[in-house]
Image (cartoon, rainbow, N blue to C red):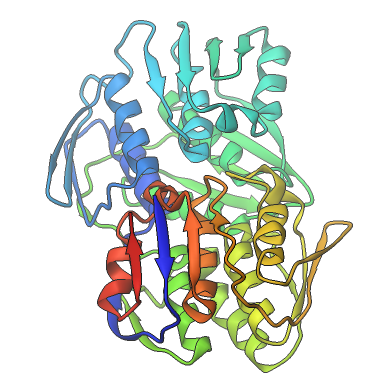
Length: 400
């Protein structure tokens, strides 16, 4: 799909879509509760559909009615040698591998080639240490093992998704366990999200020291509720306000634990000067921060190494697309500098790099310069209604 923009300003009220991060966690938490749960406010992005499919493959009965999802988990984890379709969702793959390792049966998790290129070393090492099977191909990983409760050590500077996945498995196993995180510890906020979500179902998970998480034997129970709005995707809507638009973004919990809440402070700093900002705890904000910095006063971003292991190499992808508009990025050691730049559309169609956040970030830019971006369908991964929503706000964009 190609999205073509004319220069425009936006105005109006819009609700942020439901949080993808929270939806993943609540859906799996509901399955672990062993009781019927109903979650509302679900947005059916490709990543969320992948997690729903995996829950079904593991035996949960799931019924979808509008934005409501009913989870009946009585048969969850009562299956023989399931195949889990993770599509392109890194969260889904990393959350479900430890659960698969609780079955003591062969489980295959399939996904796109790009997904299987993303790091899984922590799980591979865990399997080697315990004598489990871990076989990886270009589009699948097959595991077989019988994980036990106990004490585990995980690196804290790769992805919090590995820690979250292990917490899910330890909750399922139902005995007391400890996770020690080897510093540096990045994306701590995402661990706070899983602790908060599981608490809704009665699970007892807590930090007992700065780098130690205790998972207690818990009496899980049913929970039904609404998924809060997503700060990660709200950032793309709010960015227009720093480019002479007037957009009011609703459906955001001011007390949310989402780490990407920091975008509001970072946007303000970018609009007022040329700050140095650490994005190690909020890598999903990288593309929109780069876009805004390029069009405002420039900025320096540290903690950028993990951008290489996302749906695309996000630093490089943004550099290539900004170059087509007369700009670009400067790369250092775990650091990216974004100079202030005069961006102009020269007729070259931009690429979305099969990355939803690159498409949305460059869409923000194109509302200023005009132009087209190919591969715009990548938004379906996290925010399928993005173009519909910004059109409601007055964006002059056509998709074909």
